[in-house]
Length: 164
Length: 261
Image (cartoon, rainbow over all chains, first blue to last red; front, side, top):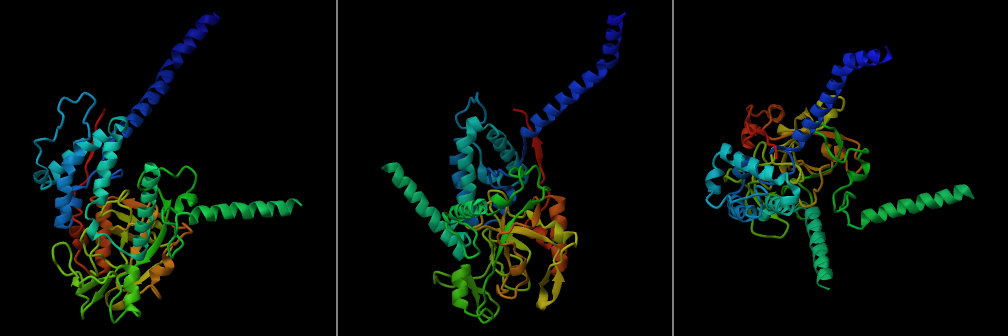
């Protein structure tokens, strides 16, 4: 009798358990999707956006498009990459002309950058390129100059310590 | 005995804190050179923003572009702000290092001096006084819009002098249009005030130099929300609707793609 009740209760409540388990799985899946989603409008900014390139000084644009292929060579698109340089035949200057092409490239790179083990350093270098181009057009208030001098001396000290 | 000990302890903690801050130097506002003043003021667990609509505290300062004949002590002001305007319309600019005067134009060669534009920012777009900020490019891209909910919803009022000195209520939003080596971190902004000198400038008092009491939200470049706020700024400056959105080419770059590894 007791066993029958237990079985009946288990039968009645089984959908609830399944539901709870299901929602847990859904949550997990949602979390996983969120982690594997790239939003090219939000940081980390690995590359310049289409409008950042378009709305910039011509020399900055040229400098960026010249240095980008070199930086992108280090980014591996997947662990089982067949090609050594997937962008060997890619025309960056042409891609930068249309928003759709540029954002397709960005999405590809941003997706590769999700894999920190594979591309951590390469993507950091890529992000640094975006920050460092157009140096001559930078703002130069007294505060900016002081910070630059401070960073320069810190860098110098670090490299000196490394050499010693 | 116990109160004396606690006082000693508090003093030593404070000293350690100030030593930590001054170890990386600091600017005239007292913000350390690493720029991350708000890192201590951040509420626990707020280190990682969950979304752009998360309200976060920030530290802010102001910068301007002095104009010869308007700014007293012009040379000193140029040394401080890096650039200054000369000529009857402010159509030429000079820099702190005494290089040759250059035309005050944007990336396309269009003049920045005039009704709204004052000087071009790091991306070559003419800055809009009182409505543009310098921000850290690691976290923001040109055309992102930073809003202060307290001003936007009207619970706090900020009046700024616009066309011909006419005072208008600020919309509470600023466009990211510039960057500077001193502006570091997600919670650090520098408001551009045009040719208005620091003294007597409404944004000088408004800027939250280090207390991090004010909060902000972000609307990303290309989003409808950002464009809406740019249009509100157009209206305040008596500009045609869509002028700023066009200037920042702020249209339809919203692309969100999900990929599974």
